[in-house]
Amino acid sequence: MSETLQAQLDDLEARFEALNRARVAGFDHIDELEAENERLSERLAELEQLVSPHPESVTYGQLTRSQKVHRIRNKLVDDAASRQTKKSQMVYKDVKWLFDGHPSPGHCYDLMRLAGELEGFSYETGDNRSNRVIVNLAAVNDETLIHAANNASEKRRV
Image 1 (cartoon, rainbow, N blue to C red):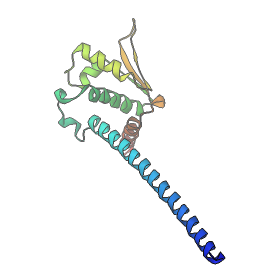
Image 2: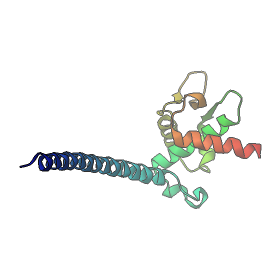
Image 3: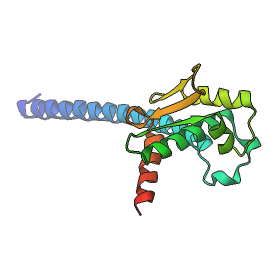
Image 4: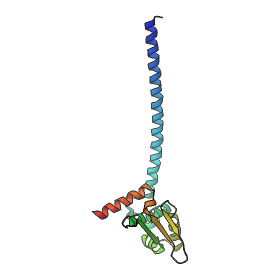
């Protein structure tokens, strides 16, 4: 085989290897995108379960426990966003009022305790004070709640 032919063959083999590496990298990237798409689809499904486009159209009996807890957290975050301290709290009667008197006392306290389990929130019991769920907006890391707080702040300014 002549040197020219060998050079052309070597060049074609190098190009083929480069194309093959690019193809493998492309398939890897597609796999990563498919995995991210699946993760985001699952996250969207979770959020859709928590957030109703028309919250007032959902009756108390239709709400899941996690939706009730989410409403408590939203209310706390909304209130905290309007305060200089960026903190807010709810006691039993506030939670009962939020759900139009529906939850039993035990269920109210369960919801308060669960609402306090997220970063930035806490549930406190004390001898001299009523049990309460508290939010410190500066410590909240949940993006959906932070977004809700930002929206609430902007609505107040308008």
